[in-house]
Image 1 (cartoon, rainbow, N blue to C red):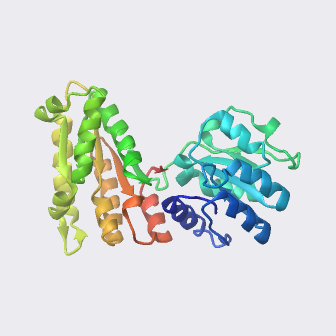
Image 2 (image 1 turned 135 degrees about the horizontal axis):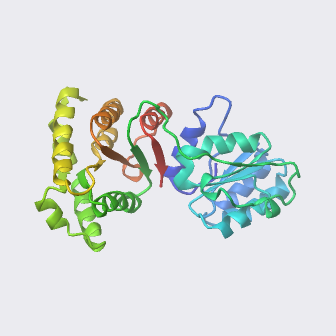
Length: 334
């Protein structure tokens, strides 16, 4: 596993360790060390970032191909341009996944590559990378594109997404797009966030030309503190279902009523789950995610939950991440 961001490296490794047939034999954070360790270990698979210190991933892949020719290479990178994908696969790498899609695509990509195939993410459907992607690789490799994201839990009635973010900037980027799109479409929004994120989000929405003051005055934008909201439905360290559904249901219904004349759907962003996870109370966070699915069955609401990996110092446990992901329709990794 070659990734310079500790948060992403932990997440990728925890995802791979969900599979008993996979073993992470080495974790490194720069390109030069990746080349050295690949030569020493001759691993079956190398999951490789592009933006690495010392030596970028594409050049590292070229060197690894010479020193460890039997090692298959799967790129997982923030870079998403067609030219970069083409160049990366031109090193002889067998796969390419964009980090934002890794929560959905990583394990499928690993399976395809280890079975001798080639994997490019769903966002590249329709693009043919075969011509330049197999320098030194066998000619019988086949392209496998990922399907569109599908619910992990098929009982989820409406959109309930989760994002794991390496820093606050990426989290706020996604939330701004999510809430901004809803308001521009005539829907309403409910934001339950930490104090610092609430202020930053307001500024970002205003910079996009949205009249947030008007939206607040007309009930189209409801802004609440996550810690205070938690205190209103938590009992003995766990969420009380009746209190949760009554409180959040009232907020969503109020916001939907304010949107009459526009679309009646409501966009809900929440960080209560992140606060609980940060406190080490992951089971309570998972219960809130389950209650979020119940909320989505009752109301026309789209939910985005945010976890900021950079703000959490505790070890990410595989089974906890897996349970959180299982309660969502789509998983994002930024």
